[in-house]
Length: 291
Image (cartoon, rainbow, N blue to C red; front, top):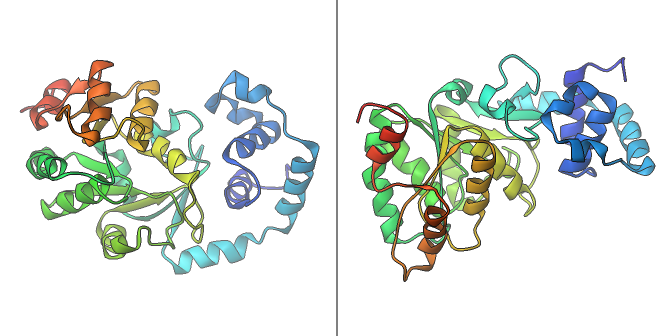
């Protein structure tokens, strides 16, 4: 292992198709104990199977770094590795941060004042109207929005931010080479040109169901706080909110009708102690910014 640069090791690990997220961390800590501070004592104690370790050793020897990096270069993809100086500090402090960040666009946006905004894919007119009222003020205070480019609230966050002249970061649950969902292809291209696309998945990784909860931890980890606009009782947005709380970030929730399924998750968050958000002023006041 000593003959392999740590960046190349992390790069190959990110590309490895047969290891789960947890298995990648286990084998990383086994080979490079200096990364153990990024995970828990419990996870460090979990052993990798001999078969998986052996399979990864073979994979590491056969992996074609140059071909993969050339393909990414042609697509305009850049990389930042965990442990490098330019890796986002707030994300580095989160639990099991991405080993490699693949990005396209303006990476300096990760160092700005960021607010993650998430919500229901089947959002209502109420949620859309709230964002229409919220985003101009957020943008005027130079807050960068972070969301997941999914249907519904995520899409409205990105589009409204752009319409108001602001900057936005889209965190993907697939490789940047995929446009997902398909109807957001042009939006994804616009973000890659003038904003920032970010993923922990290599270029041609297709979207898969397990990727999206993992993506949510990046959305939570990149920002000072998370705003949930609309969410059902069992929603990926609530996962993002929980992860943000675990990382010591602020969680804001928009109140809604007790008769709306899309508001039940937000109302539960508020009952549990989330900061009630009726306008941008509530966020600015909490962060001691000029209203």
